Image (cartoon, rainbow, N blue to C red):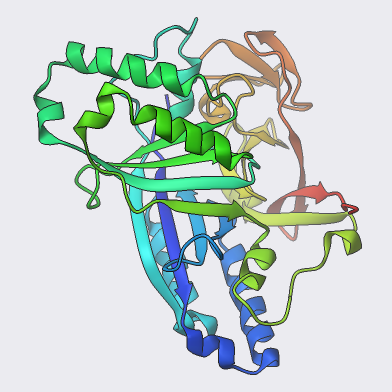
Length: 354
């Protein structure tokens, strides 16, 4: 499993109405400055922006953040507060949690893939995200583990009836006011409504103490999410975009020696960087089978391959190809460049036509 758990933060913001009365030019400048500051943390964390305009009155913007240390959250929050627009952004809610293996067995699967996926948060491109904090009643914890497993079996079985919905469960025991923070990704809100309604009829719902507030969020590009707050648009329409390269600075080459690995965050993906006998390679760090952390796997430098630490699945580090074991799909590869002694990892983003 992962050597370190992931830290997760859901930061919900609401704009002070005074900001919307600023001159249009000032609004645009502030949004551009804020976007640049937020993007500067892309190499430190996975971050997805969402809009809540039209779905809630008390929150308008969500920044879903996943990092290997909570220090990144503190630093980004401070950086946002120092921007001009930061003076008009009020934090409506902030939920802090960690990933953790469930104490309940996910029955009816051939291997532990479904369970191990819960150890890592890797946001999809689903259009909608539903987030809420969750607390169980004290009588729930007085039940035997066997009794709770039986109740959860029913809960899990209902969830499997809605394959279009992807669940991310994180834990807040002792580090925030709640016990769990759950986030559901889907392209169809009505599926989530039906799921929640059906779950109300299960026995596990009798042991729910709190599962509000509930946030309905729409996945957007960062500039689009900021534009949804008001003021003149700063986002470039998709019809006008062209293919472009995106690079992130990693570290000096002198600090990344042969045999070492490192994780890098690039455009919402966790990238694994490998130094194999002095040659640098970058692939998606999440195994295509169960999203295991490839940087923590077993490396064969002679054949330039890595074996996922969760299951026996081998990948070619040069090409990302799946070459042995349970894996069938390749992982993405990324560009690596060294400029003035500094390592950069990059990718090409294709233009999109409407």
